[in-house]
Image (cartoon, rainbow, N blue to C red; front, side):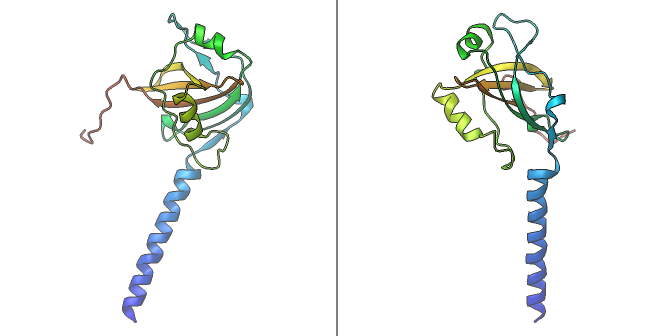
Length: 163
């Protein structure tokens, strides 16, 4: 009898801890960005220099203060993809990061496929938004665009836990 109570307590604690962990990863750290206070979406010219504002509409985004790579955004731009490709710096190792399931406009798997098959093009939006982190914007031919922040592949990442 006592073994059942102990085992049941362990299972209950594990279930509660797992549920709490899932909740924090999906909801607790994210905040929805008010479209009126949306960050300026920019692109870096292919010739270098300061980022240039991109005209967008329909902005939807999320962010978090817990990590610089939790930013995700969806929007549209009227600038043709061919014009963007001719004038702005491509981002060679664009890797869309999976966001919380409830932020449904940002489908990292579909975006990864579109980048791999050349349907979408990725551009450097801003270098160094945080140390070792870049903002990337991917644009589809129909004008739908997606932004995220990822670790800069050119910057060595410190994986040690030493101080």
